[in-house]
Length: 75
Image (cartoon, rainbow, N blue to C red; front, side):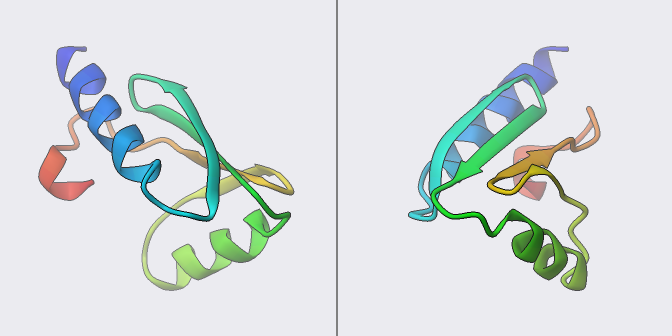
């Protein structure tokens, strides 16, 4: 659980640096990123093409659920 909190906070801080992201919220490694535009589906498909499994929960929100054993190196 400590790893999930530590890496989750790190991951959320990294996501906040992207100019297309309006807001980042979450708890531990359950993370949502709200985009300024309604392009979440397109972003999800581009991520999938690059081997990153992400899903969109609405037109402008991405959801990240990495495994609990993920490290900062992999974020």
